Image (cartoon, rainbow, N blue to C red):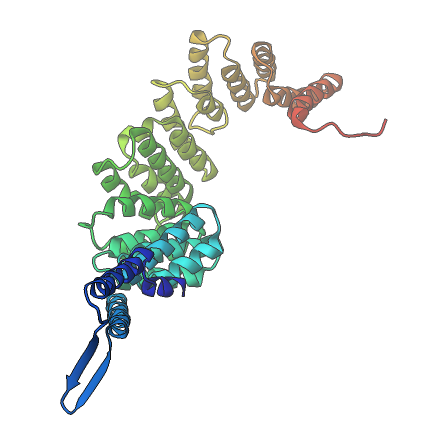
Length: 410
């Protein structure tokens, strides 16, 4: 209302100018004429006669009315008036959004969108404000209005919607949105679609579909080398754990082998992947194949976790396993994990004394709960109960180091 009144109020300078002009004319006439004169207006049969001063006053009023009407017409037909107001409200809404005042931001931006020359900004930001309040239905309505308000923004609106759905952990809805966007590979936002797809597949643990988008992500260089390797490793670990694909015609072992076959050769040199694959083979009673993979890897890359796993694997010939591990010991005589592995391989050969010696050597090199545990159960079966109890207590002490200090019975 204030803006409306402001449009029709004359500036003081305008009023002063009009009064001053009329006064000058009246003064000039009065000073140069002994008679104030009169004013005669004839319109057909009608005449109007009055003094000059009255006529001057009426003229002044007439000019004011005409001027006022012109201002009124200008205000009524001013196209920028609504836009300027909308811009001001939009700015106010954006400030509210930046301040975290989500309800105010949503309300102001939504109301001013219709008159704004770029309503897309209003609707998208209003959608984000609604999202922050957990109003998913309103969020989607604003995004729909944003799409209807501007042509050629399918990709931008779709990505905005997908990001908000991802933020709400609406994985299935987000995936559906991204799959629609994936149909437009020439879209400027397509690279971001691929990156988000990968993130959603990780959340859904959909390793097979993640594997299918990895080559394009690598080709387009959408991630750094480190980021890509981390994502690829996560994918292959998932494939190995669950199988390459669900198939009623393949056994679990065949699925795991298929998953490993699909791992790029370069990635097979990753200890974590080798460990995951061999551990899965052990679970599926395929120890002989696990042994071959471990031996092949350890010849080129030494890794403690794989050495530990080698001591658990039931290979083709336990004696050959033991002999091979003993050759490794020549190069690494004080390797605690290798000594632990040798102790376990000795147990498989029923070499109790050798096993006990290896376990003790392992503890001398580095104390581990595993070595204490192995010695504890071995000495117990050998009738050395006091030693066994001592080993178990020391191993338990190592395991319980992270326990909080709490009252216990004395």
